[in-house]
Image (cartoon, rainbow, N blue to C red; front, side, top):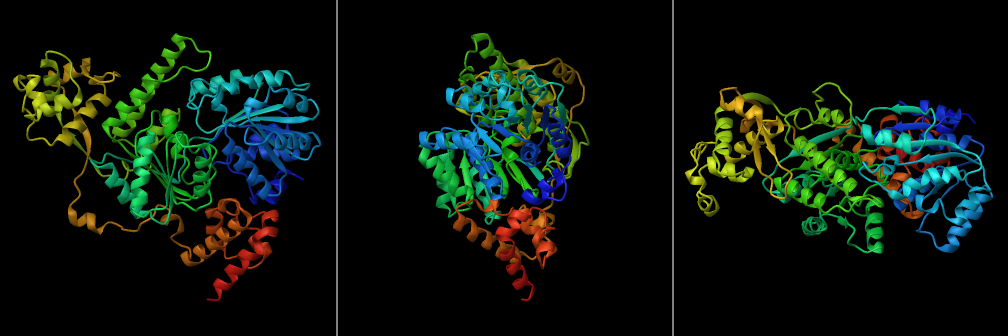
Length: 611
């Protein structure tokens, strides 16, 4: 078979997505490859298709059990013989899988990095022809990456013990310049075909809100998306418990996931979400890596993550099928304090000395600043994310909360001078809240006890709402007029630019225009982030196809999205196929899946067309 025939027969696609074919060709030509592709861009096909065409076995090194199970289940559904080797298998199951691998029963085998240098696996590796060694989630090899796994450092030693060096491919979704350089060096990729397809996910809408009451805002949001599947991320286990309990109390099908739960409960809750038995997963960042659930319509961050890498990877779990989806972040000042607390108590990586541990913490603090600035900026959110990963383009995407908000330039020089003057007049350094309370003429016991009522700028901004004072303060920090320390209790210092403001330099910031109430009421009230992607289809038919998919999934005990993705069901509704030939033209329907499920879906479409 050719690569195009494999693509259509097993995966149901007529053509490659941008970048895929270049990487597939590189592997088939025997060259090392390195692909940086956003979540949902089809990284797995880049090594799976060569794996089916190369003469020997493809070993895929993968960091998580859930990731392996998902990938192997998807391959088996598509008619490909695949297996995984990890700690979830009993000793007997592991031996059986190993024997089957040696006999050549599998074309693709997923293996945990911890297994590579074990005596059993090394023996088996010398009995087979390994055509390709794929390192999935390759950023895990770098200590500067957000998911560093010391076990990934065993990969080069494993390769060195093989009789013949296979083609090595590496893939990741998010990697800064430092992490990319680490991957190339540590894996010793030789003259690799390297491709970065870009980090942009155009189907994702990015939203940042700073609600006074996060719980109220969350309940309002999930209420508008009641029929859709979503993930809510919290920073702490306590946060997960509180949010999940409230959602369940309000009648939502929600479950939870964090490291404090037992293995059995975590697995049970994860499967309930994957199998569409629960609509909402509330979790810490322990959840999600390797979860290929394609119909997640929104990812909500109840708290701000530590880094842009963490945020973009977690947000990227929305809309993997390419349909419109939303990534919403609720920001609060306490999030910064909590993240600083977590950084201060970080354990250094295995075998790292004290100096290296401190360097890592310092980098994490710098990354936290960049993440905080994302939550404060009035510029295009998508452009901010892409710049972070070294990609530049227009500063207007038309699909983020900032670009969809009307802004106007406002001169805030007088207020800025009062804030700066208050900081400069203090007998010592103070935090944001103290300075804002002082200029707003707070009569709290704390302000009076500290003597801030004697500050010459006390009450100078009494007429300015507190939320506006905080916005202006954030602007001054973001644009380098003020410096906020990284301490457990952050305090403010003046930068040189602040002195120029005090001497008369103007300060202009973008602020959201006030929208009249009557105009707000006229805004489109259509609910659901996926509505735009399904506006022109028969929703009744779509729901009937979903019901059939769920019925088959429960019968076969597999996640519904492994039968067909939402995007494939939408395409069926658009194309309305009447026979096998037309059904095979639907994106995501290959010959193997058609033989299993095609006639049943054709029957529903045919019946519906006569209604």
